[in-house]
Image 1 (cartoon, rainbow, N blue to C red):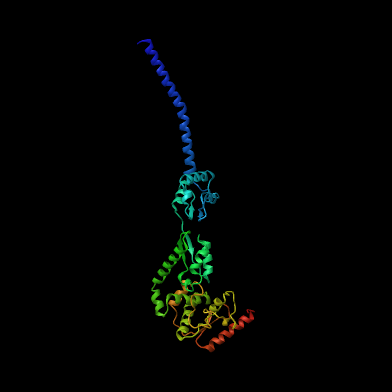
Image 2: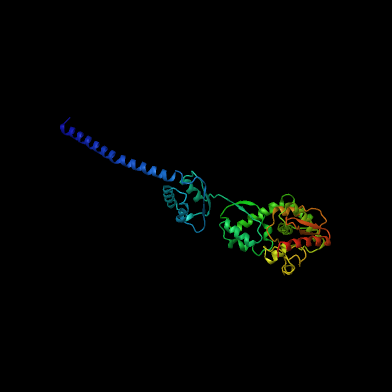
Length: 349
């Protein structure tokens, strides 16, 4: 081999060795850097998000954005997890699709899972209890406190409607926190129909010559008359007897409702003059609608009213919450006199 060719080979070999050394020199740090980034990404996005041992519920409403959502998560999120979630939110355009709702942040849930849940709107329902309130304003307020909808959104749909209380069956229902007022009303209508279609309730109402709404109206009066479950069928039977005979119901709770004075402890003659369609001392038959949301127990008490001869009742003078029943007016007046005497002795005016 000529000396010139040999020198060229040696020179080329040295050049290749130099390039390999340079590649090794730069490649290793690059690989380490990539591994560090991957480890950091895994640490921030794929490890447990919450610092709590209990489930944390995040509520997102229509006014929220990325920043406010992250602020709401600060009490529960680890610092590095919040940083990872913030990065993922901004790179997945979450800000353009913030979904309202109630979200459960479970212990051990990964940061990535939190994002997936929020981004896909995977909510956790709330257990909504319909209470046995006296007015629809009270119900609207309760619903506004429990759900995302404002009481002002639900009030126009129920306040002022005399039969609106009939639609609501007191119970606990599973609904989404961000349910709309209209969707809630549709749900309540379905639950109402389900309730009345079960246990032959519609037919039992018809047997008494009543509609479901009229049953609810009478049941609401019974609820206000007593908290004693054993008495409710007897009171229902008594009121049905009065209705059949065309007698005034003369139910004190309807006077309190007419006056909107639910704290009234003693109904006096002056109260009986209240000019209202709900005053059953002045108006024959049932009131225009319920005086509260009737309990299921009272509704069934009307449907299964006892067969009794009673036409009158008066609270017992021992203030036990139960009543003395009577067939004749004379007997009732004696019962009423004893109760009035007990009220006077206690200074109840």
